[in-house]
Length: 102
Picture 1 (cartoon, rainbow, N blue to C red):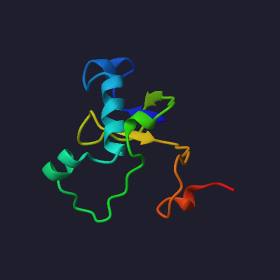
Picture 2 (cartoon, rainbow, N blue to C red; picture 1 turned 30 degrees about the vertical axis):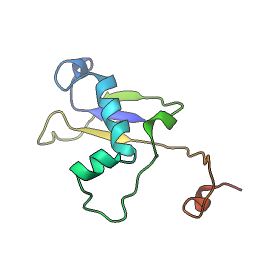
Picture 3 (cartoon, helix red, strand yellow; picture 1 turned 180 degrees about the vertical axis):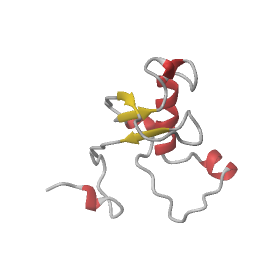
């Protein structure tokens, strides 16, 4: 993952929150919502596509941070992310057979 931000080097920990908190928020956003979350925040999209069933399935991730060298965004705490994902299928079914490599 490449994590680009407008803040000065080292400022990530002062203005917008620490890196591990921001990464936890990202991983939570990429997983399927729990039934309680689904009831609280109904989806505007049907079907809803998620990257993973649970964030407990993440076995490894690497993060590189750097400065975002574009004109400033409306909110200085905004970031640009470049995320590369490798998917391992644990259980094959009709819904994910297209993800099985050959």
